[in-house]
Amino acid sequence: MLNNWVDMLKNVRGAAGALAKANPKLMTGFQGLNAAQNGAGALDAKTRELIALAVAVTTRCDGCIASHASAARAAGATEAELSDALGTAIALNAGAAYVYSVRAMEAFGQFESK
Image 1: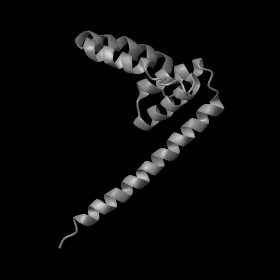
Image 2: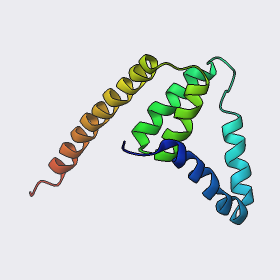
Image 3: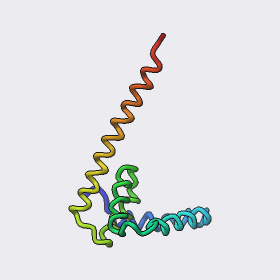
Image 4: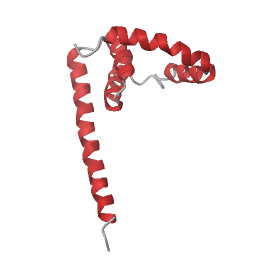
C-alpha cells in the first residue's frame, strides 16, 4: 500500500482547523468555492468527482485524491469509470509534457549564440 488514504483524509481535515483559525475569511471563501462546484447542475456528482480525481492526479495533490476518491465512491463511481478518467489524466499529462517540450526547444533556440 502506498498510502492510507482514509487516514490521510482524516488528517488533512483535522489539520485544516489551524488554517481556518488563522485565516477564517480564506476558509469561508474556499468552502464557498467547493459549495458552488456543481455550477449549473449540468454534470452529476459522480462525473464531477471523476473529473476532480483526474485533476487531482495532474496537480499531484494527495489530499485532493483522498477527498475526491471518497466522494467519487460515495457518488457511485465504479473502478472502470475511474480507470477511464485516470487514463485521460495520464494522456493529458503526456500531452502537456509534449507541448512544454516544444516550448523548451523554442526557448533554447532563441538563446542561440549569434
